[in-house]
Image 1 (cartoon, chains in turn yellow, purple):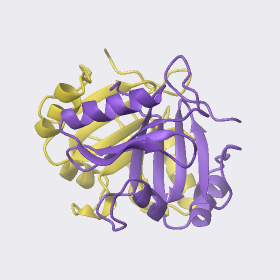
Image 2: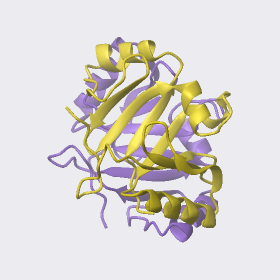
Image 3: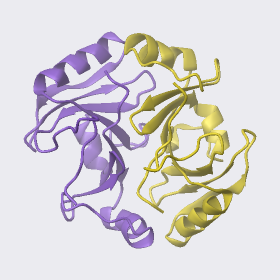
Image 4: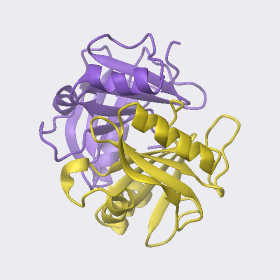
Length: 142
Length: 142
């Protein structure tokens, strides 16, 4: 697994409330890849910052909906489904705890979740609609 | 405030335990900027990933040492002390909650902390030893 974070997702209680801070207050411009009422994406240099329902994120990562895990998920995108399987296996072999075995996602990709020794969730994902750039980053439509 | 994350710090219970996962298990190479027994830094593309004591991070951000805040802090580095003050003021005006007013730090920089509406802590920092690149990222010594 390369030392690379593709996306930082902040689990939020209320998306509109969060957007009033990030979009209206700070002037961040959501990408057209955002889905109104569901998820907001921001290009942040080579990184993507996402705002998504805390409950949806917990459910996606197979984590409890309580406060114990911190509502931040880090994503590491890779170039193929096979690479998802390989990185998840590598993380588990390194001492990570499998949260969700790699599987097809409803957004057309393939992903799994592994918690690090402190419980921090990492999503390992292949998203065919967000191809990796030569430098390993992703670029949202702008 | 630009949409930019400089550094993702993962608060850990035991640094050596965390290093057994990230360094020994996954093969990530700590930067020489790391401080043995205290903090490990990894260059992750244009981002820096840090492993640091959860309690030290909580104390630094003026947050309780319990589980409620998730043990992840996002940092946004800027080019001057004045820019730290300006971005902290902007975040508070946008509805953020001031955790720590900008002040000189014991590592020779200047930083403050603001929580977003969901309580996610952001550190706004000027680090004269980590100059910003033209693209807004920082590069650790390698």
